[in-house]
Image (cartoon, rainbow, N blue to C red; front, top):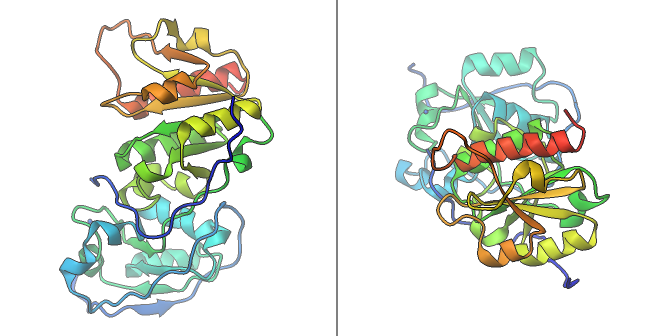
Length: 305
């Protein structure tokens, strides 16, 4: 296979995102202190841009701005525990959540809490965002280099071929972390930002699991093959079952979009295509459910369960 160099940095500028599924004090935030340092996390971030509470509501509730927020208790606490977030972002919390953060020392990297009314906080986020009294305004996470998760060759990597629904991608991050995957590989131009609804669906996994954003998935599979990885793509019409296709070698699980599946050229770079047997006769599974099953089977073959 070719050894063409693979670009793993994220292009500058804002990325479009796909889809997204929030009592009576002033909007003006107040300050509360933070706790003590703690480890965890994986990725550096660029400096956050300024933000004004006086900006019109319509301007704040854009898709692009949603990419700059993490909300919900688990995603925000995971972001606060990520040492790469030190000195970055704006932490907003209702009074009871601010007290919890201070009491339990949940902001270990020096973030000060700005106390804000829950209704005012909801107005700063996309409609329907379940914020649980916490939001963190930061830039989306950047990617790591492909080699950072591929070397040494062992375990499981998940590759997502043009999955754009943030709920599905977030759920796959959560399953991948739970089953011990080394990281996620996505195509830079066709994947949502690791923030907003995606971060919420991941329950904080996006802060803990490395993600490589590559220019071309086929070339990434070539490089992974050179590094000792075997790629298994999921296809409901494949002859082999997943159990038959997996052999305990370092494995890349390639998941395609629900509409188109794994694209032809990407499938041609897989060592095997496999299906999940469904004796119930139902047509297919949601891609995040299929990923969870595939991750379980792959980890079992690797001796992890």
